Length: 318
Figure 1: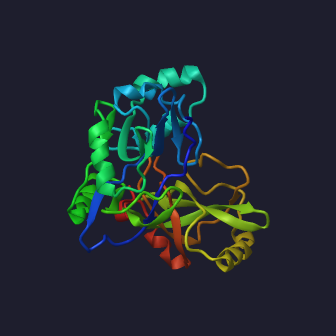
Figure 2: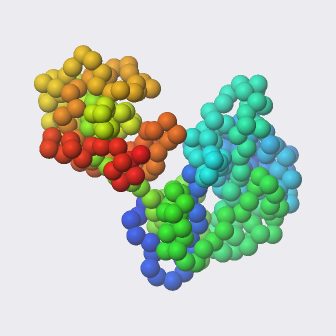
């Protein structure tokens, strides 16, 4: 029987941890969601968008090394570490490869760990309707942990786990309701994710367009010498269509020929440079090694008087 790829269950984003009883918390890993499929003959690795990634991770080609079940669908996350913590940037060094030679060369340089947190199918039977705690018991029975495969641990003190994640600079926590089934293709409050984010004020040094309307901002921070350091693009968040239209109308009066940043953005095609007179309040996850924001989200546009706040060092903007 060939197992067809499914869309995994997704948590909803929340800003507060569940306060009632009957919940467990797990670490939210900064990695790539991956489901492993084994029909008894062939093993495949499929990501959340149902794209095959089997070739990218050949070290998981033999599922019998880490699972005793005769057939299964497992849900988890592939993670890779930088010097101190899981890093999405690192795991993408593996996930984005396509050439066999590059994949082989990356194996020793970017080791990957599979953090397994659920089972959908095992021993020829679907188990998605079983309660979470029973599915986790099944995982304990069939998974053989090793250096590259681990089971995600439950924590009953979600607040304590969240505080630990803050101190470690980790992504956040996922809270899961005990007694609940697994919702294939669903996204609801049975699973809830609380991501730890940072925020800052950043100067706008450029914009890009989608047709006639501005659709993203190039942002920067000033240092003590008044140089504007590029910290990333941002095009999502809380701005309405009216905000984007109003911003588009302002750009011609601010446009300049020379780039205002002291460090060059990685993409410049289609950019209109502007005098850094506009300010955006931005929420983001953390910093990349290159000094840009991960997952920035525009919270508001602010008047020029906030430019004094757009400096390196604010709220962890280092």
